[in-house]
Length: 107
Image (cartoon, rainbow, N blue to C red):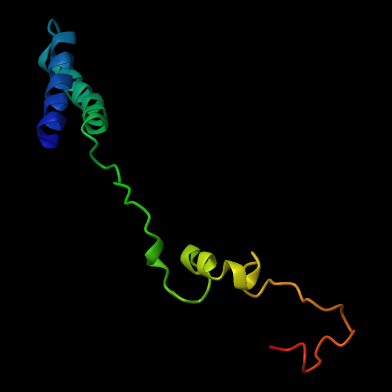
């Protein structure tokens, strides 16, 4: 059906070029038919949606590294553990240089 619409607009453009130059000689008619077909082709292609990429819906499961903590599902699952911070961006709980790496604070 799309090709039929596309070809129909090309023919319609060629006919409009022929009608525009109906009193001219055959050289002028052929040029006007070509110009009409040239203008009819992009109009028919646009109306028939030829050449337009179809958008695919986004899927959240297409992450190349699932389970690494970067997918929205991973962020939602670990929200309470990470206290709302992204992975590896969680600020330290201790003051800098004040027993930050004590064994009782690790873990």
